Length: 393
Image (tube, rainbow, N blue to C red):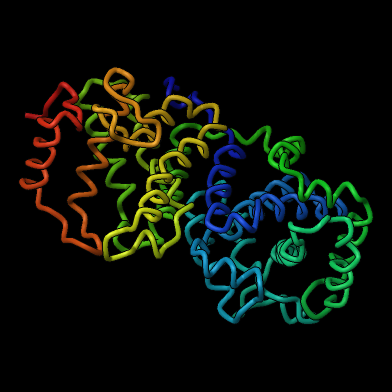
């Protein structure tokens, strides 16, 4: 096995970076995905699930709303469960099931908005609904009742009364009983609103043996790139385009096989921070105002912070998050310049600019290769875009 495949990435760190990004879409909802995962885990332990079941349950909890990335859709799902609530669950499952280690979790996610209905929820459109889908549904509907602006322990009685009143109609009675049992401990509710919930979940040790090879990491981050890009039809393939372009440039520059694969992942994840930007700003057809421009500019900062906890990504995070820095110091978010920008960061910058100007956007048509190259050459001459010191002939 070569060195690149021995580089292991912890599944929890990687999945959490994406769920944290999803929660940035609606910061007022807090760390919703982690809350659902943790409450599901506690209910699952109460009813005696196996370690494998608990693992898949927590993965499903952490990723259950990845198919609902718009601000409006997420808020609608919190305030009620509209008839189309199932749409985002199917979208998310369809994305995640492509990756074998997440196939079981995807099956749970697909049906997590199906009410129990006194047993009618055992099937949906003739398909058997997993028992754990109903568990995620219960955890999700419980968590959304927590008002983060109020002291949590004063809310417990009201929350449990609402949930208990919906046993048999919305929720499986056995699961409601388990929730009431674990919910009798104040520590559960305090954990759910704790700012360190990320670390509390890690302490369960469910994910200690869930390390991915770097090749598997590439497959998973390619799926995550789809989640990032699908919010806008104008950037539907942007991350994949940047990733492939940057990978080829690193190959031409003489980077090692491991570094080329790291660059591919950096390209797939470079715009993760855009999950913190609302769609009406991303897709605005006219010129952005000053506030909107600042919101857009913040995305590369969020990319850096979201990837920072992933220990195996230390190098590629520097490449991914600096793609809007410029040699003359006029870039963002760190205003780095000159020698502060590594060759890898410069390569990803060039790949991002090239891909962006050749794509169709709401306000312009994409450029052809010849015109795009002319723009790159002009920016090199102006001293803003780097000349990476190699060429393809």
